[in-house]
Amino acid sequence: MPDPITPILELDGLCKTFGGVTAADNLSLTVAPGEIHALIGPNGAGKTTTMAQITGEIRPDAGRIRLDGRDVTGLPVYARAALGMGRSFQITTLFPRFSALDNVAMAVQAKAGSSFRFWRPARRDARLREPAREALSRVGLADRADVPASALSHGEKRALELAMALAGQPRLLLLDEPMAGMGPEESQRMVTLLLALKGSVAMLLVEHDMDAVFALADQLTVLVTGTVVASGDPETVRADPDVRRAYLGEGEGEGEGEGARAPC
Image (cartoon, rainbow, N blue to C red; front, top):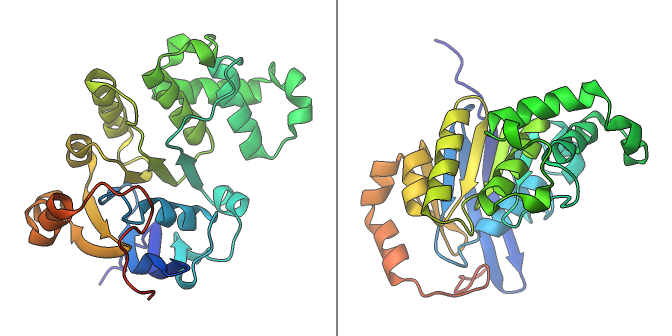
């Protein structure tokens, strides 16, 4: 029999508490190579804490995190990035006065481990500029390369941030609400863009736009107060009664872990 495919990401029994609040309660999920896996749940479900544990910003109290079979639980953020973990954030993090191309070229430079002290000559370095142009082309911004980031539309800024993440040649891309602040047309363009990338890089997606989630995701995991209540393909999860209760019965709390149970 052939060997099973190693997940690009595996969370195994993650637990994380903050005082008496449980943000992750024996949380497990896997993301297959090339898959788009959506992590969804009501406000306070623990999604942000889960993403922070995956990137290394927060250390779990228990459980393991594996990237392509390698245990990265104890590794810092930069080491996980070097192993192929990329991320886009809910709020755009760009250099507004620099051009779109400059922004992506700096991401290429960071991946190479170069110092930003040498950025001025590096702006003319084809070894940085060509990969940056390729990343811009992948997200549909080739003709906006010389435009300052501050002059881009909100949707273009989100696409630029995605290009910066792709410039690091990640094997896993963590997307934190890529449609945040977008109108319907911009959201549809982002969905089209992510669908075009599908299969070339695995993605773990946190997103509140359920139309986008169901258009994109191969697999869904639903969190409620730090606990997985459902996981599977979109149609199975959509029909799950626990998922319906979670979305119809939860209030609009603001904090992570709101209404959480006792620690795991």
